[in-house]
Length: 388
Image (cartoon, rainbow, N blue to C red; front, side, top):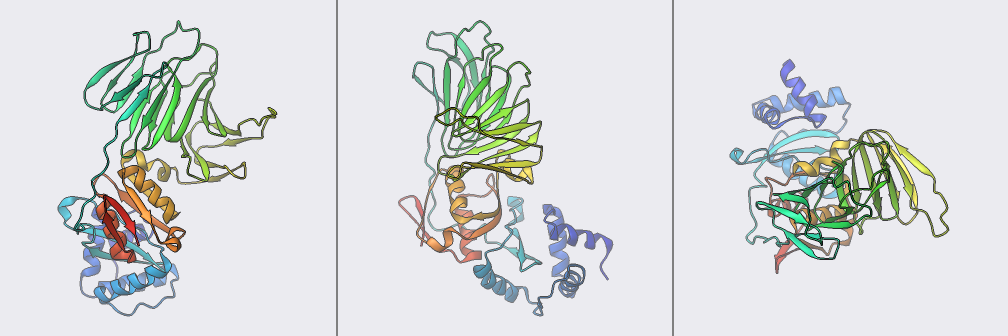
């Protein structure tokens, strides 16, 4: 007989909503004599699972799982919750059945370690002069005439509101791979830039005119509301019209799509006007929806999504749901600032589910996981990760 407490833990586990303490409790319960059979029967009975799993030996089950996973590639990658645990709880969803396995695969480190490249955050002023933002300490930011227009402190740059300007002048902030940075624009809009991104923006906005910024890469916007000054994010061929709202934009040049995820407020998406200046159809998003602009097909679609997946990068997490391995590699390269070469063409198009806590997990640990669970062979050569 399953207690009410354990039943709740099983349901949360199958819904992928367990925290680290709950996973530990459930894992310990499954490890007690006779409980694994109870757990298996409960899943079959209450979730209509037909697959028979008669071997209660977890070591044999692990081998069976790894064999099937190499064929199916459909895995939920659990997090390493705390260094003191000395192991990672890997939650594996195998052909529809939840199976919890203790493993130390994330704490085994490859023989050779990657040394991430170190690059600086650059601020290009209106006259083309390049300033380096170290991220250490505070400093003033001046325009080409020597006038103070803002200040930087750590990983944040704040601009002053200068009302007397009569024409726009632009700055461009470029954030390299492996880093993130936050800007507060002169109107109070906050922009959180992800790794490998750049933003071109006015030093100060003109009163009564539209506010337009230009994004390459990924950023989260919290836009200051203004009825008189509409806010536009230009993401290559997609214009995002904002009315005081919170949203995430992903617009890396190598990606096939530009994605806009709305958390609060309202935005409309329009393809930039063609050479003849014709007006394109406008697509409106509600909170909880994602708009996708296909760069090659020039069409915009929308769908309801879990917005936390698309903003998890601000908390130091990389979350993937049915994402092709080639796209996972791109995000890993940007976040860890490493070079990954994939020589396995078939692997590139296979999809994975994974959650990686990048604050606790090194790139070596991530690939050690892929090797242990998926049997992905790789080597570290000349400070590059090469997948065979």
